[in-house]
Image (cartoon, rainbow, N blue to C red; front, side):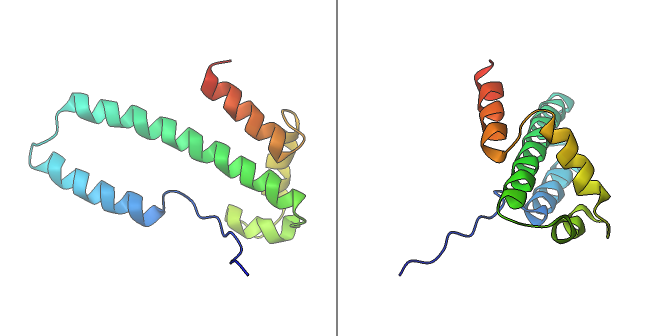
Length: 112
């Protein structure tokens, strides 16, 4: 019998902190130009948006798999259900389920 698939985020807060410390040290020693920092700023902003989109997909998928708002709420850093409920309400204006949200993300990536 095979093990169940357990998804993990492709990047962790620890990964980002390690990269930040390494990059900050390089900046402090003058090894990084301002143009390079501007380029990485753009990369980080795009990655941040992609992570937010992935988070929205996971929220929709978790609800579809039966997770309650009370189960989800702690992930939002709050002990009440208003934060995920409000996010779901906003998402449902664009997509009814995680499959539709993924289709929207694919269309964005394709420039449609």
